Length: 158
Image 1: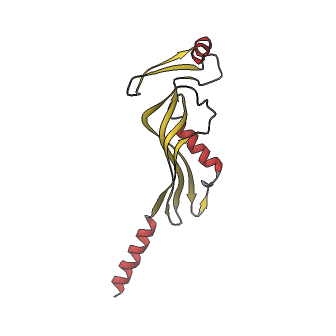
Image 2 (image 1 turned 90 degrees about the vertical axis):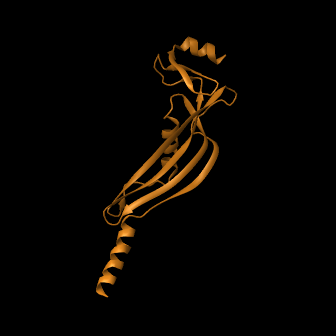
Image 3 (image 1 turned 180 degrees about the horizontal axis):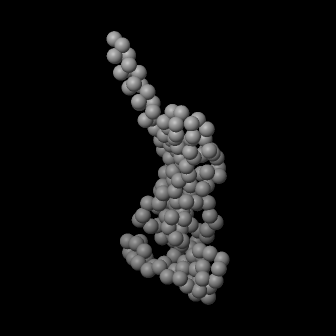
């Protein structure tokens, strides 16, 4: 009897120690934290981008909060910036999750997955060489990616 109680208790503690949970929270058709012009020609890439924001839980104390606007914005920005020239994501799924080993360590996270919407010509930085031009094939795969100067960028915008 004592052995069955011990095994039951060990099984319960083991399952709690290895527990984790994640849930699909939101879906969006188009999502961005950046300003962009809807009239321009954009391409949707085939690669699925992932951005996340993680918070560590040490003993029982979290080092931050993933349920804030700032953490969600950070995760969205990480996903968008995973592809150079991306300005938005399409077919977006947002997932919140956590895993925790009681009184030791755990993590809580928000994860954003989506297909990058890329501007064919974009300004990527404010220094003099911060413009690029990307060319895509009929399957919308990137075939050429080159740096251009400001004059070429202005011509392509017209």
